[in-house]
Amino acid sequence: MNFANRIHTLRPSAIRAAGKLIRSKENCISFAAGLPSSALMPINEIREVTDRLLSEKGAVALQYGATKGYDPLLDEICKIMAKRHVHCKKEEIQITTGSQQGIFLTAMTFLNPGDTVITEKPTYLGALSSYTPFECNFRGVDADNEGMLIDELEKALEEEKNVKFVYAVPNFSNPTGKTWSVDRRKKLVQLANKYDIMIIEDNPYGEIRFSGEHVPTIKSFDTEDRVIYLGSFSKILFPGLRVGFSISNTAIANHFEVLKQGIDLQSNQFAQAQIAEYLKAYNLDEQIEQIVKVYGKKKDMMLEIIKEKFPKSIKHTNPEGGMFIWLDLPKGVDATKLLEKSIEEISVGFVPGGSFFTEPGYENTIRLNFSTVDEEEIIEGMNRLADFLTKELEK
Ligand SMILES: Cc1ncc(COP(=O)(O)O)c(C=O)c1O
Image (cartoon, rainbow, N blue to C red; front, side, top):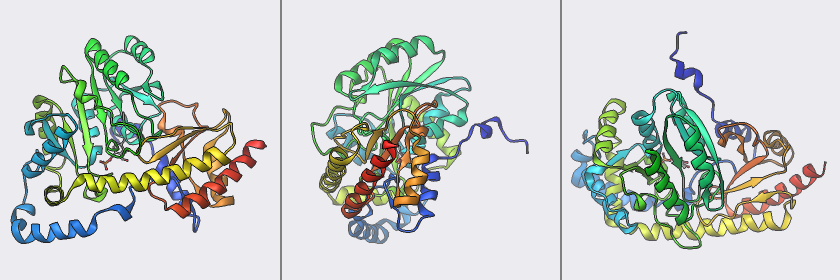
């Protein structure tokens, strides 16, 4: 069949492949998924606001709406962001179908074939999936525990032609759990100004901080409208409602709006209205506090077993928030082969980390999720994994 060139660039998701393998084994404990805990979703509250919404504003909530988004939700987002020191106007916001669509809109707006996207090494797989069909090149830049290495980033900006933007997940990144320092954020903005590029700040996990102080958004250091901020209600409320948003300058937001008219006319009006009503009736910060308490405990439990029982040759991150811990195994270990064996022998799954990189050579890495599993599963699964990895790495 005569497919478009972009179809030949597509690659299947390694997370879904790992998930399929894990589901094929009964009673497998999975640290592979990246789902928020269903137990923490405020389902009674959303039922209550939905009933009210249907009785009082059903005809509006179920009708077509503005492409930009449901107006009361835009108001609520302005209020939430102001608390985070990002003062935006409604015309700078575009409601998106999850922040994933925000990523896709940045690709549609900025990428020509052959352009370069700079990402952290490793980065969010879903961003690579969004950008790849636009036939761009990727340049990965190493990061330490404070974010992208700025010297390396500048080297990349000198060497690469047609760099359009840096894509970054600066808080509790998926997959590593790492967070950028204030200094790196400021330096990133300075380099974007110097090299005339954009920054995509993807921040779905920023609210979920268990320890340490909140770090200001990259957007708050933006002096030349170069930062496109992507937010989402998926990790703090309901991923199934698929409501996210972008904040940019008005000109970019207008392009997003027109592109979205061609993609899906608008994000789900009913879901937007449900979230707006929830935000008006309930205290989002209390909901976030609950999540932080539960995830923080789970992270500690997982980390304690890693520190006490995992082979010392395995390096790990110690995230201050989010949903993931990252493991670096000794060079030469193939985590995909380990996954197959782990499922077979100990019924424990995880995501091999190689596919979060834009280049080969990192097959010795693993992403572990602690939000989806319950505490008993963490204890049982991590102890099994500790014994298994000890045995495998001794070979
Ligand atoms: C870094 C990052 N960005 C974006 C998304 C997409 O989230 P959503 O489209 O549900 O808002 C995810 C989901 O896992 C993510 O980890």
